Image (cartoon, rainbow, N blue to C red):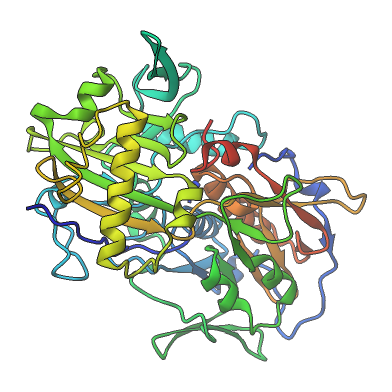
Length: 497
């Protein structure tokens, strides 16, 4: 008899996918504040002699934003960054994958089928925002990743909207392929291959499985240094600090520091929605990710779809779901008799059935898994019990061969902080915040666009600001406001189309 097992999230760096802002082409319009006198001058080294004494930077968070920022800081030749990441096996945050051979933290949390496959359990798709300006550098990076074989473009017709339809007078569904002009990409060896490539080459150190304590994990010293501590041990004193994650941990991490304005932006609400005007705080939703393995020779999902091209789809006809993807069509494995599918829930469903992210109770795992299997059946107009099994049996009996459930507690930003000018005009040229008085900045998708593109570009822009020897603060309250994202409200899993 099949048994459901909970999935312990192994890479909980909070960063992901992953808002609709207008981007400027230069930094001259950014609202800044005069630099205040400080015990240690923050000016980046600019001479040959200075280069030998690069400023050290602690980057807290090894997702796309943190790695992008560290890459650009290191490339400038002016900084020596170190990334601290909570991921036990590798960096990536929400852009991470489970790979064959990965050993679980809990030895009992083994999955005989899923552990042999590449699985993207969070971020699924990369796009380059077309409705926003200022993403030219990210487009170049995507082109480079594609040339290097790190990214692949989804084949034409393989990404669809799953929408309601009528067939023979009865309610049904149909697949609506997305326009070929909407280029979408996925990681050739999992989405985690993207952050892995960014962290490779030992250009800068990435310290894995490091939990910088939310309570006094970072401390601003009198000499102008930032002291970083984890597990009771001091990891070092750094000239500058970059916060490249969000959620409650980031809030608590900065709560006892003197950088009060920057900390105020890290305060977080968790909700499936935000007011149209954007709300007063950063707001993140919560999403369940369920991955199942089923017999390919008798797959009720493939039979219902009746489309060999289908790889991923935005679910529009079922309120409990938002996304469906076939991992084995993206990443074929040696076991050709098995299909592996991942489904992402809606934020409303996630909130309704939310539990403790790191330790989901067995009964909640069984309940949520069964509900999501039933939701797939409804969306694809399958017979009741096709996946879940008969009502008097365990959910998925004799059909689901293996499964893993993860709660993505701090999932997608529903709003972004938009910097404004002194004339109260929106200025999305920032895409980051920086406190020049204390030498601390923040980057992430919540500051630009709720996507991998937004995270990468935010990190790059913060690094450029620091490298250009800008000594002023930028983006701090009251010079800005949160704006809601229509794209995220519609799709639920990020700004992707």
